[in-house]
Image 1 (cartoon, rainbow, N blue to C red):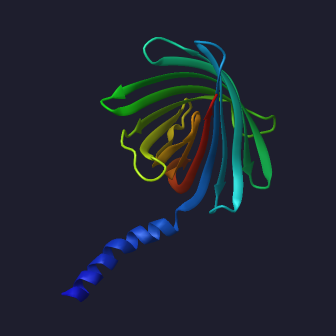
Image 2: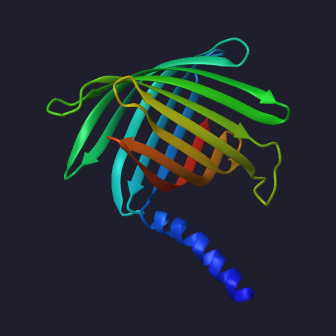
Image 3: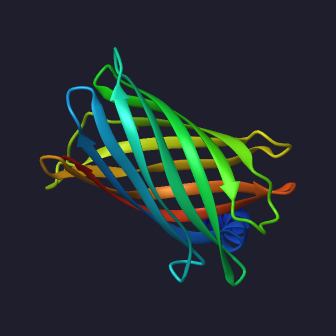
Length: 218
């Protein structure tokens, strides 16, 4: 009976193991700042560095700066600019991304809830084969109320959907979960796992990423 059980477990796991072997791995490291300019206005900056093929291939990064305004009842609006660099083959391509953001924060019971709408206009450097385009991104985040461990860590889960306003349509989905904890007042660290699904052409690909983040609120 035990042998049959082991055989069944192996039979169930083999497709998953084969799928994982064909799935890329990497990392995504975030650095986020928020600086108040008064009661309503603020500056924000979201910066990213990512790798693929494990930690060996650094292939994408961006820097941005946004001017934001707090609106009524948990809403906020931002306008800004993001400069991105993407490695294609042996060359790096620049992308220029002016953007507009509308976000909402509230409490669902004791949980923290936020939702962010982001509209980007993606312009590519001259000579690139891609055409300029608009892209819409929607990110939803839930943060649990419980704290545990020596660092009083809290569980979080996020999902971000990407939609290109071309014939591409819905082509990215990021599902992230992990832990976040406060190092000190105004400084938060997070670490987690991201399942990144993305489509180029007709086929979907997948990448599992180690996600880290440092959030600094002045």
